[in-house]
Image (cartoon, rainbow, N blue to C red; front, side):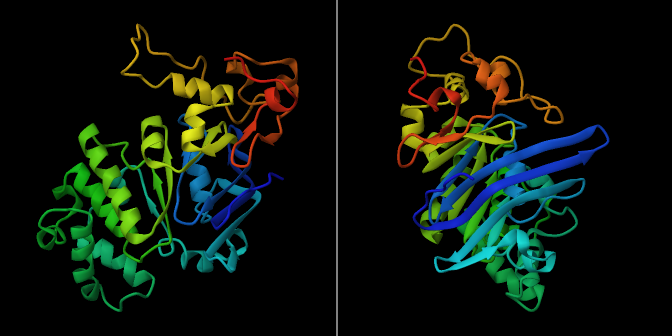
Length: 339
């Protein structure tokens, strides 16, 4: 089991496995994922589409629907430093008291996250009603107005009566953020919150999250494939590939000293405005089919440094210093990645 190093964790994930049982076969979506998130930080899961980031985030509150199943693992939630809850051991009714209340989600498509049949104010107030913060929807409308104002939606007294189709994409995402904040959560999971938005609105949404984190004392788990957002927003980052974590480090260190070949290739695929590029670099190949994942290291079919052992054995996770770990056979001995 991976050794986790957190001073004041709010979430600890130990050896998590999530499988999906389909007619085509068993999809091994998550295998052996371990990490911890410290209270008050912005922690990031980054990787290509299909690497398991969203599945991991949903497993934190048992939000895995059939044919998916959490096979094994532990998810510990610390509402206070001295109190630990084993989320995967809770019943569905007990988890519902935490999900949407103490741990909330900002999903990547605000158009599907909001119900088209109800006003924005109703949906925000309903979140409070479900968790016993208010007794009637009407009581929550003034608080909904304040939340819309806090998320910088203009004329919140009018927008609280609007339906989702009457709002722009950026306003819908702000309304989703307001809904996520309705019950004063301790952890907000932002699952690619800017995917459906244009570049200007993306910047506004991320600035809003940064501002709210500071004002509300939030802990944020940010899921993205945008390395620019990682550099701008995150304190620590875990790089995921094909359902596993291949590297984790403080953000600045990861950018200065990436160790895993996949991390290096991800960073090279980011356009650099200070360097002339005749051709944008890309990672050859694709994420493997997780019904039939490759043996050994799952990245070896695409890795320029693959060795025989990479094709045979899954690499152990190695702590190269107090805060930086990597799962790669290049670091099991004295070998290092060529510059």
